[in-house]
Amino acid sequence: MTAEPIMTDLTVDYYESLGRGQLVVQECGDCGALIMYPRYRCTECFSSNLGWRQVEGGGILHSFTIMRLGAPSGYEADLPYAVGIVKLDEGPQLLGRLWPGEDGTWDDYVCDARVTFKSAPAADVASRPAPWFERAKS
Ligand SMILES: [Zn+2]
Image (cartoon, rainbow, N blue to C red; front, side, top):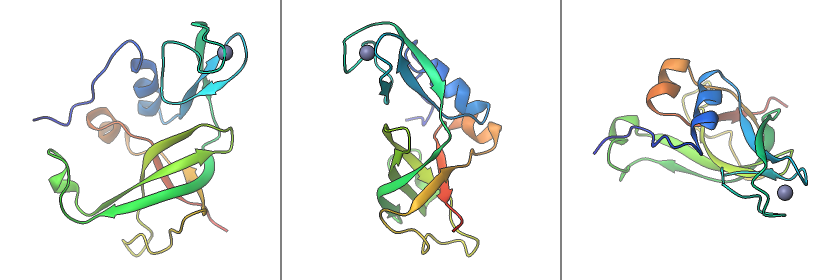
């Protein structure tokens, strides 16, 4: 099994933005709703008039886990790693990877902490696209 991302017409713009170091969410051209994850129809007004909007990348860490064993197939070499649900300041929430702190751990992370988007290097994003977040400096 491969860890290659599944590109569809729905996700290609999102993944390409991550490759440029930008975090985007869908925006409804009719009602202005911001949507994540990508969909074919607006979750508020059912319009198909959807585009993309770059977000600042700041948000609140809703929940997270540190994977130390039992990684999904293709992710074994990444262990340990952390993933979390981030509620962006703009509203949508999404799953992302968490950068370890300077000490190589995730000890500084707590639920409801501020986090900010910090892209992985383009080569890493190309092979394994994901939004990466770090603990916001206080
Ligand atoms: Zn809408």
